[in-house]
Image (cartoon, rainbow, N blue to C red):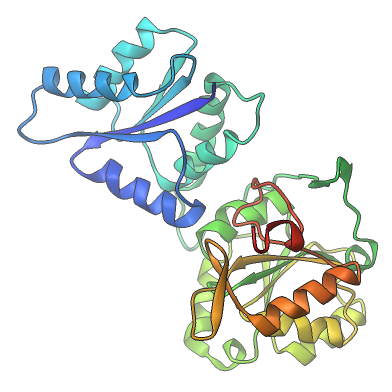
Length: 316
């Protein structure tokens, strides 16, 4: 039993937004698409929608995310919702933030389809913003490890909330999910090349959500400022484009007690660790050594994924 999602739209919109969601959060289970094409009658679309519904398990609750209030996809989905009160919900105005939040809420076992429908309406609205006004929804969360709330005292004392390897830097997963869940007040990009790239810097300034500060620093500058306690009292999410940057920070004495492998694409000489993470054998060896020293290395694409140490997933 779970919550299934049906994306329904006029034309190919539902297929496109599903592809976007898959790119940001990975391919999701129990997500189907139903399209209304120009040549379709309402009756034909209804038959197709009923066939999609029948493909889910009998005990699944279903959430219809449709493009337009009052359109044929909404009207046909709404008829099914009325026939299955309490087990189906329909939400119109589908956009990417709404879809990502719907995916995320399904990770919480106690969430019913009605709960999810009510929650994602707010996220869909908050996702509509201009570059001049970018409200950020801060969600405080406590990630648990081994059944206990994790504490990374040395990191936290210096204001470091999270460290992530992500060659895409600030993108959908980071801006929409990680920053809010961490309650971050600052994003720190640490990369010796980005510092000297005005185009990349301008893009990052646009990408960071409003209300969150941005620092773009060289590795040695970042390590010095962090060790000096410049960011004490803040909640800093550090993002490194290269795994070597994180190794260099640790070697320089920055007390990184845990970090996350988010995205590292396939390059010559690398092997696949997880779907979105490719590393060299030298980097893998270093990670295993760090783990023996007590550093927790995880590989979560999004914060709702199960947290496992490197040795738990490497080679599995």
